[in-house]
Image (tube, rainbow, N blue to C red; front, side, top):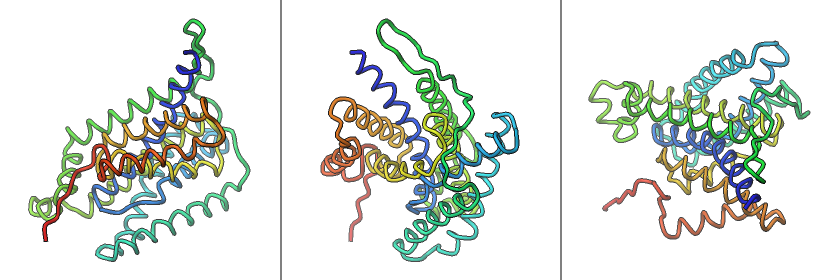
Length: 290
């Protein structure tokens, strides 16, 4: 029972980071129809940016995170304006290749600026333990889950209550109808990329506190793709549930089976889910009649 609880907490913490990264993926796909393979690299940029602001510039971690979020917004808008906007109307495969190239560019930029040496982010999440009888629960994992839950709840309120959030949902449902209502689709596209970068910075910062700052953060990108496929490419609740499923599967497999199978099992489950629900657990079923 002790092992189960510890694996569950760790899995939920990892799943919370995956959900934040997947949220950005879903935002971009819902608003623009682009499958962004560079989302994992946004986490890498965010983690190194926060580390640089804290360690090299000497900012307090709260100011450093705020500065990194501003940087993320600028980066997201620039990428949308300069890289993706010229690709509007092009073949989807060409757009996918552009995002793959963007991932390579971001990785190269990180290596040029910060090098390849792993760094340690000064801890701003408590790293002690909670004790519940015989169960020892790491505090950093619990706080990671709570922070991610607050951020995801804030995004949910934004989409359901704010004017811009409702406009994004309108564009995601029908771009032409949104245009007729006076909504600037191009502005929504830029906002989607900016918010995706913001969610990635938060997820990258949490991940850096848990595992350190290094190029291995980009490895989460493939898992993010599994998360959004399981939950549904166009579903925000699906990103949250998918993140929890993948995070828990990895930890349970690593804890009870081992042998490196934790890297394989999530994708096996992905295939099984798609055999039953091709659009994911919460994805919108689209039926085209010809």
